[in-house]
Amino acid sequence: MIITTGDRPLTEVAARAERLAERLGVPYAPRGNQSITKLFSRYEGEILVVLLEGTRLLRPGRPQLQFHPSMGFVRAKRVLKGEGDPMLEAAGMAPGDSVLDCTAGLGSDALLFAVRGGERSRVTALESSLPLYALLAEGMASYASGIGEVDAALRRINVVHSDHRSYLASLPGDSVDIVYFDPMFREPLEDSAAISPLRAYANSDSLAPGSVHEAVRVARKAVVLKEKRGSGEFSRLGFAEQLRPGAKTSYGVIRIDDRS
Ligand SMILES: C[S@@+](CC[C@H](N)C(=O)[O-])C[C@H]1O[C@@H](n2cnc3c(N)ncnc32)[C@H](O)[C@@H]1O
Image 1 (cartoon, rainbow, N blue to C red):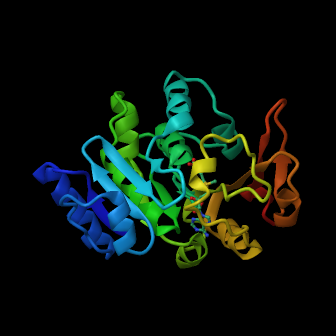
Image 2 (image 1 turned 90 degrees about the vertical axis):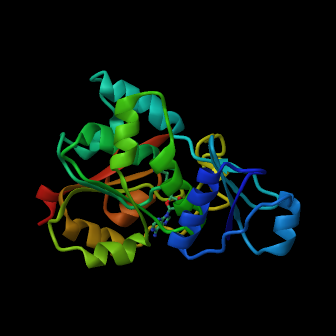
């Protein structure tokens, strides 16, 4: 992967791109007058393009990906108005609770946790794919939604480039209120507009029982899994599926009180 900018970038945008490349330990390629096609012929892997209006992730022959909280924004506005959200209710999340989101993706769910959690909560979002992590970290730091509380919630999220298995293993027991998993579904929902473009860049490994075991050790309140409705993953991994009328997805929950 390399990081670059658009044509004739503002000095501050070029500096942001260069800083990001340095932090991630990936090459920064000054754009000059090179086309994206030329950059693809010169470098291996993805290209992250930092622009004033947002950041884009490109790979030859794949749809480009842009940071946007999409449905997360709509759901966040509802929660700010005091309405419920099925994921938050499944998790039993209260303001102030800490959350470890083990599968950050484009951060929509992490945003919801940060909105419900409020200023006193700590939300950490883990992403193991480096290009997705780079897109997410840039987006969380600079995206402007037009709603101050949403932007403040985005900035509060601690985005970490890590595989959740090793990260969970490094944490003490009973150290986070809620641990959340939303892995790439075993059988994709083909009409998922939010997830389909992510697929080319994502880690699509199945969730390991060992990771769930570690999550149960680390969580104080609940471990939550999102999967396709009726997925065998719920029983394979020991989650009680909570069916929702008309929904194509379900949340599975392990309540920590039931841990013994
Ligand atoms: C379905 S997406 C999550 C979508 C996310 N909940 C949202 O609201 O945007 C799954 C994400 O988890 C990441 N992932 C999969 N396995 C992982 C692992 N072992 N550690 C960290 N991230 C992982 C994938 O790369 C992908 O970006």
